[in-house]
Length: 196
Image: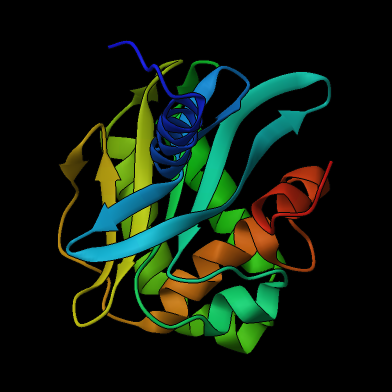
């Protein structure tokens, strides 16, 4: 298509930029995150994404999706509607080890009384990871909060077991990355949308 009118050409260029911006993606450590995600009919937006390091090694990348932007842990936990944290592995890891790390991450970010109420859910989540043996580099899982349903763990695209009904359980999981003792401080900042 040839535009004889420079104004028409500029309008077409701006329209193309606007459309491509609407389908924006963020790339972190080679993993692409779409700007939006549909969680059972709820549109969510990427709040932030970053890399989890252990010493100098990249372990996984994580992205946090919310229905509206949040810049603090409190805002994330109080945010209404659907939520998602998605994890893509950057190295192979034993799934049962990952389940233990998640359990420890929950325990480290809660008082003992609150943690004791969640022990059945924590054990069930650890069991789900143990049954899957290993997560390979490039594989991913998502942990969704779906209002009216609960917490749904999807591993390699397949929902795992029955939903966890308690909202406290989902918030406890989010504290692994966003709590006072996060898995990785730089990842916490990235998930909260803070510049590196």
